[in-house]
Image (cartoon, rainbow, N blue to C red):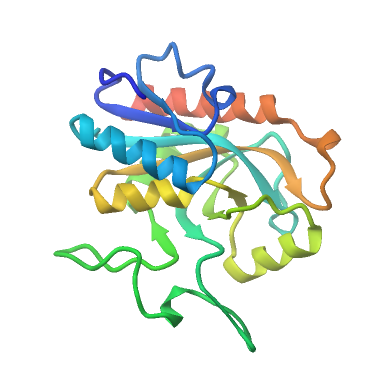
Length: 225
């Protein structure tokens, strides 16, 4: 569980300790969630229930970049939208998103729009974060969340074509989902540890990608909080 004190109320979350080694000494509240959407949603919800709502949640970690997105391993990406990639319906005509069922994940309430697969992040906040990060962030765009790591190039290319996402992880949409339910601003920063191709762990650069993402988060903590 995270420390309640932090850099002006910012909560940083990461799936694993490796993805948060540089954050520990930053003064920001930090929560290690464990991998996957359920663990992420559980820990973040528990934190929000036990503490005052943070001014912002920032998720940091690694991601696999889709080959057609033309992104280099080791670069850092900033999300402007999070997407659940495997919630929907498989029909004879192919995969369809949650709108096919007609039941949103987040109901419309007040000025909040209903949310199905897509969770657009606050555009002004993302713009401020991109400006604060400068050239340390290579691209801003859609991130995809899946329950499994894609280790087949053909499937990764198909997911990129379907969603237009830059990269994939196993947690981001769950964090964006919980933050939307609680009206908490959310940012997500990920370092590219590998390309989504036929699985070859020898090519991966996990520590380097994790550190690169954290350096950007530290910059955001300094300039945005």
